[in-house]
Length: 340
Image 1 (cartoon, rainbow, N blue to C red):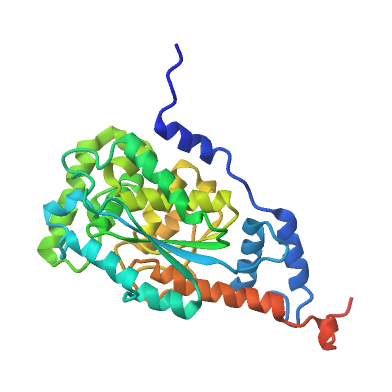
Image 2: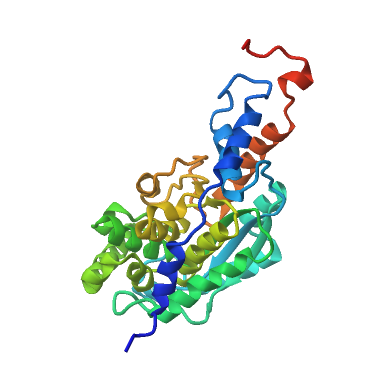
């Protein structure tokens, strides 16, 4: 008798059937770029960003009309081990701050004309302490992954996943250590500002978790459920939802990239529709981006999370698109181009 599919089987099947880039749209964008009043390649990575938009939106004339930052908030049982400088209740307090418009991400999105949504993920029920047992069971992790699809329900054309969750830099560091090899100290940072003793506890906690979960960590989805948080699982789902809905993704910092790292470990092509918005000052984010094959657009020594670095990068991407769309061509401006 055939066994029914397990929850993670559906995720693996989804990743095996993702849409690819639209090469015809890339060619059309490249052809227009050749007509603009500038030397070929003079705008550097701005030109590459337009081609990236065209490829993953599937549009010869890409647009940014409905950009969105989605902040996913979750609590972590491992906070009980003293890995954060702040108590778990700060997660809910910050969610209220987002809702009231008082956080940094609110100001960035307002200034850049970006939509903002906040998704609470059972804040009253933290994940389990991963030093003692898996943070989530398979069904819970898969359901949270699926919940991430909700962020892409409104025709978003450029997407940035963000997060909030006391203890989530510990979870992210544990994921990196599991995927790329320990010890924990190679990947950890000070998060919300732990002192030396707190950083030592953080490293010890992660090393203990790696030992506890052992060989099960050979599977990236097991890494996600055993060491991850609900916000990380939801961001992973949202990144894939964006791919399915032809919305390119701008990755944020240290924690958001943990979701991308799980997907990349499952299939390196799964995050081809993503660019790195910035490199965070937290932990070993620069090394993580090297593992993911992503070169950051911005380097501002930020380590806030919330989608803040990605939101700032969206402003740069919009500028790239404006140059591509609104610059005059040699013919329309009466400027002599290169001789044939």
